[in-house]
Length: 169
Image (cartoon, rainbow, N blue to C red):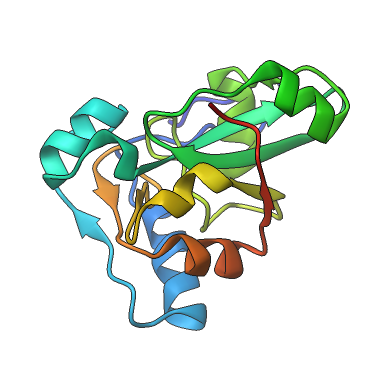
């Protein structure tokens, strides 16, 4: 039986292919040229993902589940970036708050370590930090802690319907 969250919804199982299948379905409909790389290795942290994919940590497109008061959303930054509290507050009007694992999974339908910018269980607002623009290709998670895909930062933002923001250092 699948575990449930406090709100009674079924929690995403990191071993389940459902989250990756939703990302694949999104690609089939919106970007059939993109391919999910299922590494079979744990890529849940920036360092593990970079080592597994053979890229520098900055090229990992880290997807953070945040709250700015009442709103929850995703922020995609380069892997070695940190959210700058002053810039974040100037942009969003509040201090950043990370969602806990349960709230992030509930928001996206994806397990921690596999949260990506696409393939969510429902609508999610996505922002892309300008730090991604320092790379020709970045590697976000694809819905599981063992999957990723290669994409240009501009295409990532376009497909996610994301607004560019400058909130990291």
